[in-house]
Image (cartoon, rainbow, N blue to C red; front, side):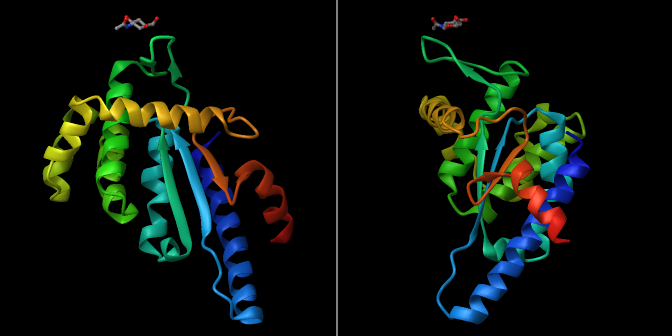
Length: 198
Ligand SMILES: *[C@@H]1O[C@H](CO)[C@@H](O)[C@H](O)[C@H]1NC(C)=O
């Protein structure tokens, strides 16, 4: 799952959806729902962090975010144990960062707010410096209190259990991460149409 091909598919799919958006707008004048884009990922997976930093971040630069409902689900290939603790694919540090990012999303529901912080953390992951993730509070000018409280109080673990349920309910189930779902369809299914379309 090379991230560059994922990105091409994402872009093709977004362009396809944008064209539809314009067409629908021109033909009906009705308000058109945004394109929903869900990213199922885990914080320490190299393909995920590169995808987020190198490709997904572009939708904030080129304005596509104004027609996209972006939903980040930081859980990925983790699993829930019988005692409700969570085991993560890349170990306890990944569980920590998944939970911190879940807390960031909860504390700052506005995607342009929480993406700033999450982008900062994932950039450190790309650069193999994620141990200094706490510098991202300073870097983004965001107060750390609410996020750390969410993590330390166990609220973050509850959020992760909700993300676990959401990830495990995917139809079709995800088979790898990053797993991108556009308007309810995994990108690998949308991609066939988009490629033919172009
Ligand atoms: C919960 O289960 C996991 C996996 O079986 C185990 O490693 C962990 O120690 C358990 N935690 C508690 C608090 O019992």
